[in-house]
Amino acid sequence: MKIFLDSADISEIKDLVQTGMVDGVTTNPSLIAKSGRDFKEVIAEISTLVSHGPVSAEVTSFDYETMMKEAEVLRKISDNIAIKVPLTIDGLRVCRALSSDNTLVNVTLCFTANQALLAAKAGAAFISPFLGRLDDLGMDGTDLISDIADIYMNYPEFETEILAASIRSTKHVQDVALLGADVATLPGKIIKAMYDHPLTYKGLETFEKDWKATGQSIL
Ligand code: E4P
Picture (cartoon, rainbow, N blue to C red):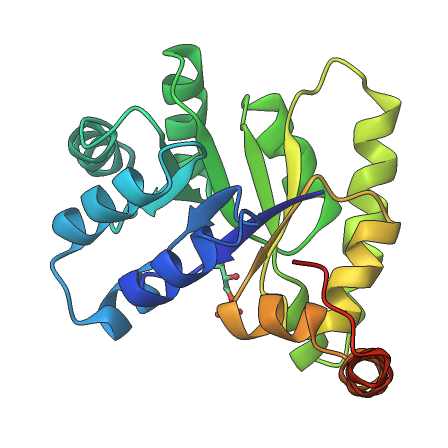
């Protein structure tokens, strides 16, 4: 499973890219607002830092014509930009037009399996089902991933990758990996929480103490 970083924070991106675990980046208007930076500048900087993978940049209009104009500006920033469009009928139209023109499209704000089916038919490179926001409503977001995975499996001609989004916990990551999501986009704190385990640190303390007692050195 690929791991994308869900962030527009340059220092966090720099920090985590050097671990070699980050295969791409996703942003959204809220993350851009949080960064306090100019949208196009920050996307250009992220695209350079993560030149090995897609960087999702989201359009901010709702109608087909304006979304297409915004996409035109955004896709010129770098070759690795994926245009993020909302799962509306205009968003799907934009998806179809851009995909036919060899541009990666990430269809976002997906909350049902039928929406994911339409995104695949529109040629999306990625579909972004939002787990955490469904959980917030007392539903089980992982059921949605499971349904989309089953539907996509039935139609091998679909090339759309399932990009699990709105991930709020390490349990979510494990659940979507078990269900076969192609990608999970994660806030930095979740990536860090994935490797932190108290028993790992406790074990290291013991190994360090016992190793010192041998008086040996590898170097
Ligand atoms: C990613 O593409 C989404 O925009 C993001 O994961 C949304 O997460 P949130 O529901 O925690 O805001």
